[in-house]
Image (tube, rainbow, N blue to C red; front, top):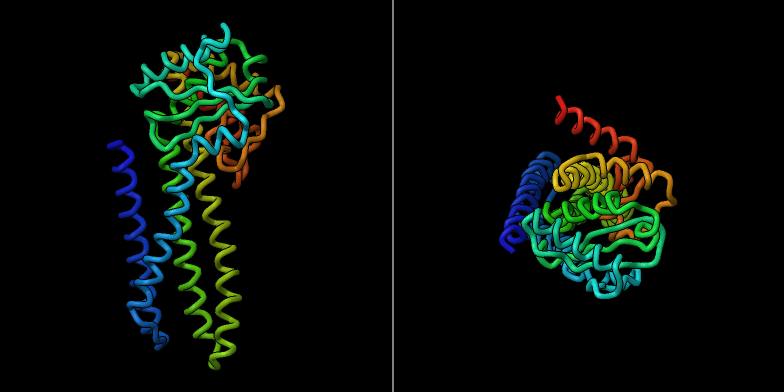
Length: 296
């Protein structure tokens, strides 16, 4: 809980700092072009953007476990269902103990090769694996995949990603209104024309800034995937199993997860600006460098 509160406070401070900087630049711009907008109006916009942007992310984060299970129709297991399920639960518990977190809830869902972790709190998380990944991977490969997901949980990646998304949502809402106001005031003299220009620029800026925000979120997600791969290698004691698991995934049809879960899945073959995962080749190369570093 302490880590969660610290992250929330940090991101709120960052968000307020960004808005303060934008406010200063905005006021200087208004003074330069002799534009008139009351400072209290700017404060209202900033508070509205912060609340609107952050609340959605917080609600999604807090409801992430039940929503994830509902979306993929995952069934929680206790280990009493059979030998494979018992091994899965015991392995998750063992890895969680090594990562110094409480054992997550474990679930299995019907689908192509993938796995994911979710949850607002690292000690109340969920780790789910697909039926195909259970069937097609060796236990050492599957253990590495579970280590990857446990690393996501231990690193607090779900919380950080949600807060980052909230900050960017708030910035998109705030900046798009500021850009629209300044531009419409500069370009138009008549009030009726100014309003039309305002809304055109507002929606255009929101679309462009949202695309930029998505690129930033996906860039950060790819960095966390590398970190989770390395975290798995450290938990298991060698990168060999994680490399083998990635090579196996490369030969399987990757399972498609809902958008809200993609960043915390294991599978993803191709990388681009809008990819939540690096390419499998890049991930293997990073693990190979780790292995060379350990052997040198």
